[in-house]
Image (cartoon, rainbow, N blue to C red; front, side):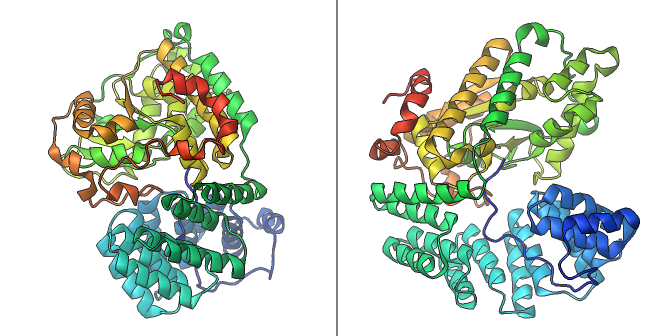
Length: 540
C-alpha cells in the first residue's frame, strides 16, 4: 500500500550481459532454470524481466539467487539493488549499488540510481555529489537531471530544481514525469498558467497521462477553477482504472469482516501479552503509530513530531504489512491472518507476540534513520488502523495517534493523488468513500473490544489552534513541549510522501472545507460517508 512510484524511479542498469535469447518470456526462462538451476545469465535475465514487468516480489527471488550464485557479478548486485529500491528498502539498495560500482567501471545509470537512493534516505548533500558524478559520466541522460531536480526540490532550492528539470525536458521532450514535475514546480513558484501550458502541450504531443492529469487538476484547484479541476481528477483516475487499478472490494470486505470477527473481547482475553522490552531486538527506539486515511494529515503530524529531539521519522513504513504477510509462517500456522493468531493459545506459542514484535522492529529499524537521543520513531503508513488489533497485541504500550479530517475533504484530496493505499480504493469517489467508512467502523469495533493507547487528533484543530494540539500530542507521547514542533516548516527533513511540498509551508487553513466547492461532484460519496461525518462530529 503506497503512493505511486516517484517520477525519479531508477534507471535500468546499462551494463551489458550475455543474454540467453533476444526476447525471452518468463515461462521460457523458468523452464531453462529448471533444467539448469545454476545458470547465472538466465537467472539474471529472469530477474530483470520480472522487474521490468512490475513483478518485483518474484524478481526478488531470482535477484537474490543471482547474488548467491555470482556474488562478484556487478549485474547481480544491480538487479538486487533495483528490487530493493522498488520495494522501499533504500539502505540495503545502497549497499548493492555500491557493490556493483566497486566491481566494474562506473556507469552513469548506476551512479544516478545510487543518487536517487541517497535522496530517498534524506542524504541530500551526498545525493547532489553523486548526481554530479552521474552527469559527468553521461550528461545526456534525461532521468539523471530529472532525479537531480527532485533532490533540489527536496532541499527546497526550487530555482535549481526548475533549471534541472527543464534540462531533462530538453533532452527528452516526451518524458512524462519531467513534464509533470516541471508543471508542479511552476505552480508552486506562482505561475499556474505556464504550468497548465506545459501540461497541455505535453498531452497534445504525447497523449494523456494519469499523473499529468492529476497535476493539472491540482493546479486548477489552486486557482479556483473547481469544475475543471475535478474533470481532470476524474479523467486521470479513469485512466488508472483502465490500467487495472480498480478497488479490490471483495478482498477488502473479506479481510475487514474477518478482522472484526476475530478481534473480540472473549478471544482476546486468551491472548498472552509480550513483556516490556528490556533487551535484545525489542530494546531501543520504540514505535509511534500515526494512523489515518491517506491525505488526512498524517504527514503533517509526523513532520511536527520529527522536530522533537526524541523522535525519528520513519515515513510510510512497510514493516507492519511485512509482519502481516509473514505472520502464519512466523507462528507456524496453517491458517491465514488474522485466524493464525489463534496459535497464541497454544502452550508452545506463548512467546509468539514477542516474535512478531521483534520481526516488526527488525524490519523497521533497517529503514528508520535513528539518531542519538531518539527514543521513538514514527510509522505513518496510511490505513494502518486496519491492523489496530495486531498493533495493540504486539505493542500494548505503543501510542496510536489517529489523525481525523472531514471525510469529504479526505476523499477529495485522495482524488487528486495517485495512490495505491486501501486496495486501490482511491480511484473513484464512491469506492474511496466505501473504504473510508469500512475502516472507520473497524476502528470503532477495535475501540469497543480491546484496550488501546489511542489519541484521536483532528487535522482542523491542529491547523486552527496548533499550540494546544501539539501540547496535547506531545503529552500523550510522554514528551516535554518543544517550541520547534510549532515551526515544523523549518524542519529540513525530506518527507518521502506526496505531501512533502505542503509540509514545507507554514500552517494555513486553505485545505479546510475544500469539499464545499466540489459538493456536486462528491454527491455519490455523501450518503455513504454521512454516518462517518456525523459520527466524528463534522457536518454537511
